[in-house]
Amino acid sequence: MRTIKEIIVHCADTPEGRDNKAADIKRWHKAQGWKDIGYHYVIDLDGTIEPGRPLETAGAHCTGHNANSIGVCYIGGCDAKMQPKDTRTDEQKASLILLLKYLVAKYPGAKIYGHKDFAQKACPSFDAKAEYADLCKS
Ligand SMILES: [Zn+2]
Image 1 (tube, rainbow, N blue to C red):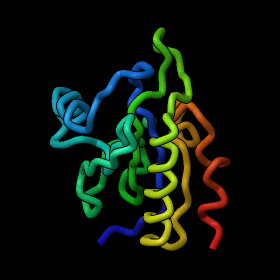
Image 2 (cartoon, rainbow, N blue to C red; image 1 turned 120 degrees about the horizontal axis):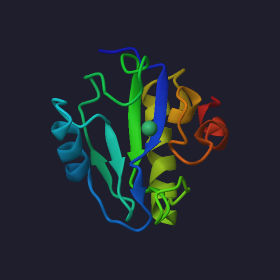
Image 3 (cartoon, rainbow, N blue to C red; image 1 turned 180 degrees about the vertical axis):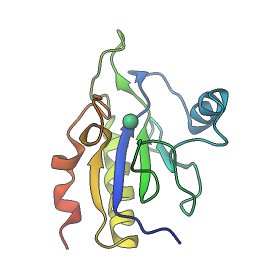
């Protein structure tokens, strides 16, 4: 089993309100030549938590951090003009907290970050590290 040190939150870089699913992201990632979807979980607009890549397999979502992390992606993250925007629905916010609590319990000591903590990106369009800091306290 992999050692998980980081749980990294992403956005799908899709425009607000567009109802994409994990299957869409899988298709986009495979079109880039990847063997599978890069994330381990996808949170749909309605709050559905969809499984992506198996947890025991390293993801492809954060350069230099894939070996010991889990990638969680919510659908959205951009406004209609494709500028970064926190577009999380109430359902997505609730599901993110549920999933992150589950992962922190499953992998004690793992910390929650946003992609932007490790890359020059806006992803996930909000400060995940600060917002979820309390979830990591045990
Ligand atoms: Zn990202």
